[in-house]
Figure 1 (tube, rainbow, N blue to C red):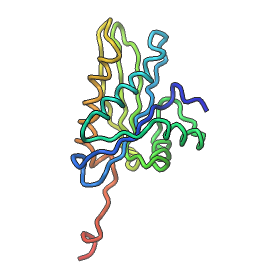
Figure 2 (cartoon, rainbow, N blue to C red):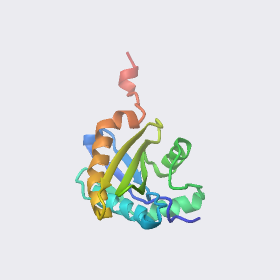
Figure 3 (tube, rainbow, N blue to C red):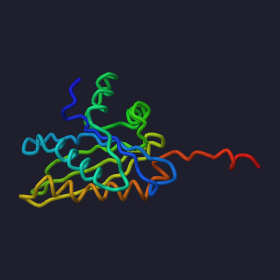
Figure 4 (cartoon, one colour):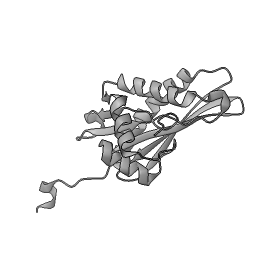
Length: 171
C-alpha cells in the first residue's frame, strides 16, 4: 500500500493541559495535488509533527510504527480521512484525534488547511495557514502547528467522548 500522499505519522500523547486523561493524536501526511507543491504535503506534515513534538505537553511516537500498522491493515486512505475511517484508525492506533490536511495554491497564496478530527465523536475542526507568493512551507507549518495545538486544547471536550466515572454514576 502506498503511504506517499496519504498519511504522516506521529502519535502524540497530550499532557494534562488537554484534560485529566492522556489524549493521543496522530498526524498524517497532508495531501498536495498542485504540481508546484507536489511534495509539500508530506513535508508540511513532517514539520508540523516536529513542531508539535517540541511542545513540552506532547510526546511523539515514531512514524514507522504507524506506517507499519496502516500497511498491515491495508487501509484505503486517500489524503483525507472520513469520519468512519477516522474511527477505525483511532481504534487501531489508540488515537483520540487525527490531524490531516491539504496544501495548495489559491491565487498567489500558498495555503495549508488542517482537519482536526475526533475519532470518538466525529467532530471536525479546521485551521488554516497561508503565505504570500514566495513564502516557504516552513512558514506554513510554523504558523499552523501552534494553531492545531491550541484547537486541540480548547476543543478537547468535544473531540473526545465523555466517560462517566463510576463514582459519578453511583448515588
